[in-house]
Image (cartoon, rainbow, N blue to C red):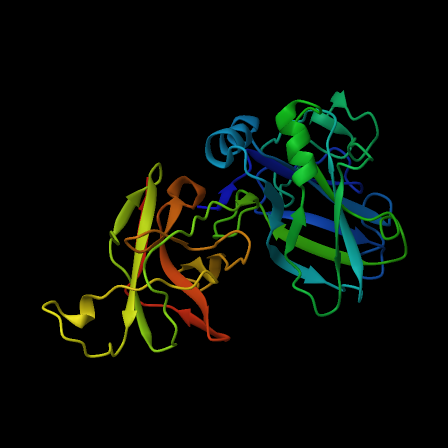
Amino acid sequence: MAVYKIFPEKDAFILSQYPAQNTGRDEVLEVSNLNGINVDSSAAGDLPAVKRSLIQFNSTDISNVITNKIGDAAFQSNLNLYLANAGNLPLDYTIEAYPVTQSWNMGRGKVSDSPMTTDGVSWSWRLESGSGAWAAEGGDWLLDASGSSQTFTYVSNKDISMDVTDMVKLWNSGSIDNNGVIVKLDDSIEFSASYVETAYFSVDTHTIYPPDLEFKWDDSTYSTTLTQVTSSDFVAKVTNLRSEFEDTSVYKFRIKSRDTFPTRVFQTSSVYLDAKALPTSSYWGLKDVKTGEMVVDFDTNYTKISADNNSNYFTVYMDGLEPERYYQIAIKTIVEDETLVIEDQTNYFKVVR
């Protein structure tokens, strides 16, 4: 599998308006600026009020992916957060991510707790209220080339998918400590007269949308003596599909293709057994069966379908998928300048613990 995801070991968001409040077990991560236009002016704390999010991925998980799965191949890492809700978004805005320079405790709080929970990271404190003050309130991070940003327009998808490859490489090499990443609005919006409210699903969400750190690399090999499919009138089928896979397994899916109506020839075997290969411009993807959303989308660089003398194939690391869910295999190919997407409803499987 040339697309692999790991999930956070901890996350939380911090609030300037309530500098000791912890939200480590909240279902969302907020990245916002409230300037008082739509907020009760009698609320405690100063306005404008800013919210930033902290997310950390396990260093061993990162090293395992790079060392044991990617190897020497070039790769890209994306930080993905999925929008839960938003309000009063400007036409254009930018969200930034920087490596955090100090360690922090997730805590057990929620923003709705009354009285508020203060036993974990907050705007003023890294560990808990009164213990381990940030070097600078609101978190401390590196302002250098290891940071990343993503700009959103009025019509763009509002999920975050930010290239953090440089940051991940620095963590993995030990050049900087892995204390996670802080996600914030850019300086032109924070503490300004703007009003931006975004919330993303956290690791404690009860949905399929927790944050993830996604690794992509090209593991494809296309070397076959099979004749390529040259017409859009063909059949492609996963021939070795199983109903369930353990979440620790690695599996090579085989795709066999043939013409829908093979040319009649004089031979002893059935012409319907004559296998062909999908073109080099063929890609695989995975769809969540329940929601219908793509979990691994088609990517012309990172989900190429391979081929050998037996058939086409691609490999999936099941521990890069969320367990106890059903996934449907999808195939995209370009034949004679025609783009075809094959979604056989019978091509699905479950990942189990």
